[in-house]
Image (tube, rainbow, N blue to C red; front, side, top):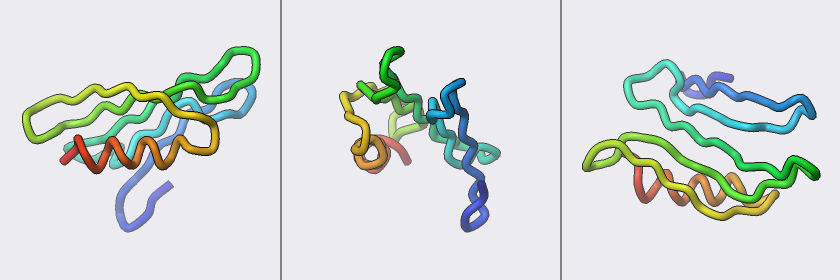
Length: 82
């Protein structure tokens, strides 16, 4: 999906639940979000954001619940990524 010239790539599991997204996938500083899902229910338990921050590479894992994952990822991205 492309929005405002920024390409975001999504991956899904066999149950068609999102497992990751990469923002600015083709750009110089992509931001990757991976979702930790329960194998039984596919509900989100947490997520990991990988990006380039002010002081170098950032890998940050936070707890999240299904329905709050976009807000949780957005908070980490705003605080940690450039």
